[in-house]
Length: 195
Image 1 (cartoon, rainbow, N blue to C red):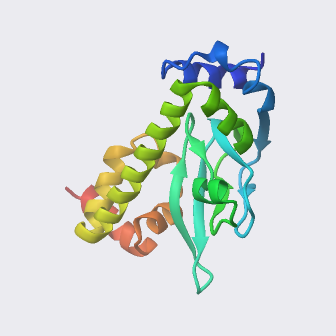
Image 2 (image 1 turned 90 degrees about the horizontal axis):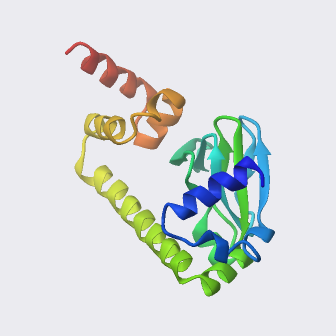
């Protein structure tokens, strides 16, 4: 068994998912995908057929606004799923672009295999539900921060919640994610550094 599949098995086992129940069917449908920095994993207007699980590397999702600017929506790190789940389940084109910010290795999980895994293993299905709930909560919190926090508060919150991520992403991508201009982020950082 490859180290990548072993990593995914260990991840699933950490959620009390009995991996041995999945070995025969679920894992036979999975594949490994290796992408280079700046490669596009999923392009806008495509219909995804699979979900990715990041074994190592870093990705971001973004949209391109009406002025042609990239607006970072999210970052995806190791031991996290990546993809447009809404487009996956509805079989509709995604509006996002998923780009590698580092060389990235993924486990590809076809949606049909995921559904089969859910049907065969209630613990895996529960894991999927918990992840969906967590994702919804994160999205709601992100909306709330835009409505209730200043740019400086959003920056500090990001640093606090993502200490290992801060040094892996560019200021351009971070400012886009925070919804502020890069120059504003630079001013905020200088102000905070002077304290």
